[in-house]
Image 1 (cartoon, rainbow over the protein chains, first blue to last red):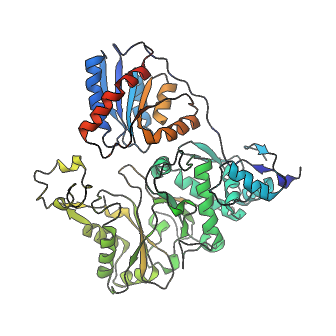
Image 2: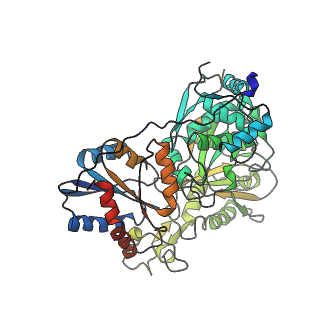
Image 3: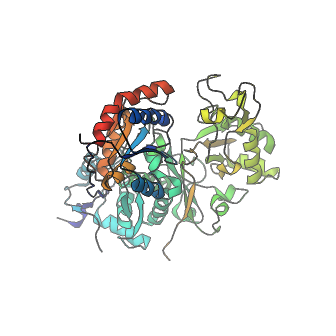
Length: 95
Length: 357
Length: 73
């Protein structure tokens, strides 16, 4: 085939396979982080989830954290902090 | 030359290549120039860079924008080889953290990166900064803007309706690239304002909506003219939107002359517009004159918002009103381009074009 | 999606709540990041015009699903 009949790929696939975390049997004794992505109304949802967690599960602690903006991934510091201090995460609310 | 891309054994004719590239979903819907090995190599050579040089990771998918990948998209967009250095600077600008391409590419809002070229490279590449500046007819403007768009989609993942969720989109998402009309600019051009030398060339990225026209044929003083512009800026986003950030005010040469003729600097313009663009709390209440208005968190600061006269500025600071001069020398028209400016949203970013010596 | 994919990859079970209009975007984003299996918890769109109480009702509706997403009970 002539050199000019080949063309190059304009895309780049960077995906390296990511893992899914192992699940605990229940939330009893777990530290649950409720992560607000900073989009309006997400706090109302998380407020109610916090109440439900207290009523229906027995978490060791519930931590409320907030991203500076929904428009970007959480800053590295916040990610590290959440990893260090929590057992599970609920993030809300992207709409 | 080291290769970073898979070569596909292509179809027999260029026409088939155009169809195949469209079918693969890597175009903007218009025909593209098939990125043959020879064309890509010519563009890389003209940039004076190595094919494997990594310029940036393009959010939100973080595809690797190597010189070669940039060249493939630039060729597809119809760029001449010598445009590649400008496209590379544009990639650096839109992938800068402060620009937040992640948000700009994923949002339901309107905005699209607008690229503004400054410096001597405008003349060398015949970048239009004059008559019809936002319109068609100039290959550099048309294809550099298009190349950067293709890169945001093909390397960044901003495919419309999949990751790019813009409700309306806008026509600038085909291409959105202008030069500043430095020759008709009575003040320092944009890149000099941002700390570059007049002799350097730069590309600025700005996340903007479509240009919104302002007509003023009668004003003969800076104050009159800028009052018209301020009142036109009042309604962007919506008439009660506040706390906005970077927004472009593109003055036509005739308007710029009127303002500069009264001895006003860019800072004077920014200050004047910012001050005029304030409204009392009582006029910004949600549910009065429309459901939109001040956010709850702001309202709670006022005991009796319905009568409160405290002024709330439309823009967070005067510096967010970015002044640019562009367009033809005839016509008393200017344009404002609303940005994507949540407090942690997109900011205008300027990068230097590195030209092969 | 970036945060959820990151946390899962680092061993932290995560439930990401999104509105129905963003299911396709979320799936495409997770896939582009290498997390084809990433699942979200979906509430009806739109959210922005809702009152506080209307949003709270949504939390009650998705509680079971969130619990199921975070545990293997």
